[in-house]
Image (cartoon, rainbow, N blue to C red; front, top):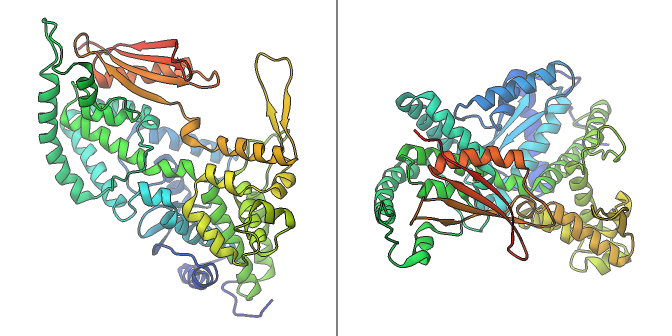
Length: 508
């Protein structure tokens, strides 16, 4: 270990200490690791502010809703009873990248947090294709400010209760309010304000064209038949919030704009669902490399390095299935181990690695390989491509088939060549977020009758929707549509209707 001037001594720090820490990390991150980041904005916050950030999705600017207050009280109660600690940081995918750090943390933990969030997560946000495709870091804060002000103005004009009911319905459908196809709709405050005026004119034209064909007492059908109806409505449509924003006949223009706000915010967070293992793995690998280098350069002492190692090993620990704290695969643990393994294969491959990873093994430049991985994969494709037999053995992975009709469990995949490939495929499937979430589409609208909206849920492997949850969400859907809504659960292979849920709009 070199003997350099320590960045700090003991646990105390001030803002000048934070600046020295940031400036010491920056050359390691950029020159040694080759990280490409947004400019950093570091903000020190209190426990109460951290709890508030938890409640409002971590964003510094957000509209008001009762659910955020409920979450704040829940987190505060659990924290004060000592049942759960708080995160050391929250990082915002914006430009500049905003990292919240806790005022109560020691100087060592502030160093760790900056390395993890302000450089690791920051690089991942800026470079991963999912975030580049779906988010607009330069304008998100302006858009959130626009959204907050717009919803506040709606509360003043139309009443708090009316807006709250609309937000309740929008939030209930958030999971079904994202696009999964690869196209981008950037968020920009100035454009959004202008487009809001243009959208009002476009809606008038579209609805006049579509709903003037809806019959009253006569049973006239839309000219062009059912295919024209479906084309006008853009069916089938998996983004239910988008469909309602564009086509719900009873919504007013301000209500459509509120749904659009909810939908765009849901879309903004969508990449985080797809990259949890990779994002945390990237940040954890970066902080480990940076903290190790700071110690080697004599910028932090042995006591600080041991404090770091204690926190680091706690974060990457994978509880066993029989332990009370087990909650499935720890994304920090899997992500970090896979990043370490990729680095090992690039620098010191085994003969087995050369067979499984011919393009990676022995290249010698682990950071180039990792930066390519961080930019071009999401969790499911990352695991499917880079989970090695060596790591599967280390984790002692095996696959169990649990079929309800059989009186036994079957261990179907073990540690042999065929088993490794099946294990990797099965684990990757667990992280395919679109495949794991319910596949629900709007498929039809009865324009020639009672204007009933029909949706289909494709049932795969016998997985039906939770009946109680489906009933609650259907009530919100019917309230937004304004007429009867029918949700049919259909077999994915045969198309047979297996179950139905219906809801009716409340009459005014």
